[in-house]
Image (cartoon, rainbow, N blue to C red; front, side, top):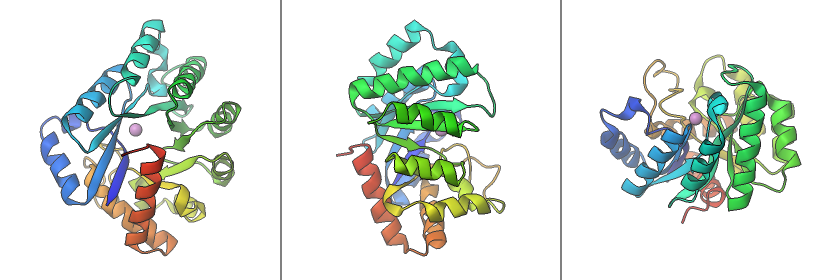
Length: 253
Ligand code: NI
């Protein structure tokens, strides 16, 4: 059994054949998917998918790219959505100083609001962080105790060690299979297996050999094999431990 802890099955890329994608994912042994809200609309769509498919759970959040749009009405709506059935996390939220699609100030505020929401509801946080490692870690540490996973980890060793020391989980995507991802594979080696989770971030980040194509949750199997190869651990053990991590982190029943 495997779990895709971060995918976006509500995105239009899956509209033509969503049922088939989910069927393939079950055939590949991926028993659960956490569908991640990136906007208010996609958070609502996440809830709808969770209601329709037994194996899908929802995370409710607003991506830092959209922080400029996060007014009081939006905050109230997010809180309302977060009370929905099968909501297992808040996010994705965080800071993206690489693309800077929203102002830094608005990103910080949206991040702070979602941390507060997660604390109120006793839910873990799904963190997006690009080129904002120091600040993300400082903000999260100031809000401890909380549970968080750093999604699509792309930082360096200092950030990794800081996150691990704060008790956070690290999740890796299929980009660890890329030819030039030697640095990232080093981080996989340094991440203890009992703090590691797997995700596709589908439809994004297809593995090597599939680049340019739409990614899908079934590829978690290939990802688990690659993590096993990097760490010198068998596939069964990778599957067992990462599944246990995800079940405990998201409190899946
Ligand atoms: Ni994502």
